Length: 321
Picture 1 (cartoon, rainbow, N blue to C red):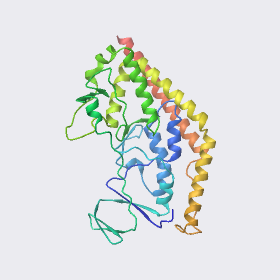
Picture 2 (cartoon, one colour; picture 1 turned 90 degrees about the horizontal axis):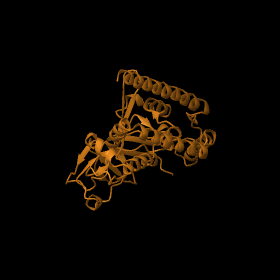
Picture 3 (cartoon, rainbow, N blue to C red; picture 1 turned 135 degrees about the horizontal axis):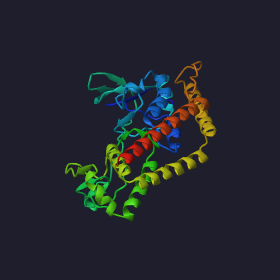
Picture 4 (spheres, rainbow, N blue to C red; picture 1 turned 180 degrees about the vertical axis):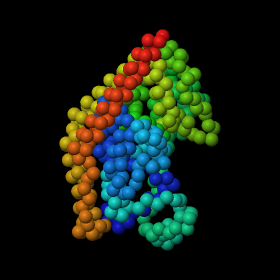
């Protein structure tokens, strides 16, 4: 709490998720399209002079009507990160550590950072015996060895999505559980699409093959929903229930007021601890009730238009049959 400077040394600067953007996607009855997630990120990242649309994580088309976000870590949900970077209390350094010397960290490019405390963030790994327990040889979708009775719900590595229903793992798990039950009710359904699903085979040099990538889950869900309209409808109901519960527990005005109060508390804390000047400008919280509601209104309109286009396309296709 009293550090005057924090350096974050990393090979890649991934995107972090502002708290209000996490609230937006968790409260969406229909997953929020990528362009609106990028736009909402940009409201916070503009404080740091970062163009999110130009970030390597974002892959958008020319008119920015579609955007896929891909990174090897999930979005850490935080607001203090942005405040600390804005006030220069935190500095992001792209690089790798070569060695340590007295009171210093030396990077591979020769740059030296003065420090007296080091925190090594290792992330997490899986259970190294689980591949053997389940007899893992390959995945088709998230079904072990292509067996419709052996699905595995595991934390996907990283992010790859063009629509977002949450930044945490639980919303994704909920959809996978609905899908697993749908297949278990009639395993023959799976046999008809099994060979279309993405396949990954065992890597003998890796101990946790059961942990799949976000791109693997995305491709699996796209194929399954394309083949099973009734499953798509069930998943939509699950998203609707999630949104209703989220909004009941965390209504906009209540959540926003808590985020704003925390924002001001952190500024005061940095002033009280001498991390920033006592008369430093108190930067405004970039999210308001008005700009959140305006953005969600546009997103809802886009989602409705896309749905109507999809229905018209299906009707036209049916007419030709």
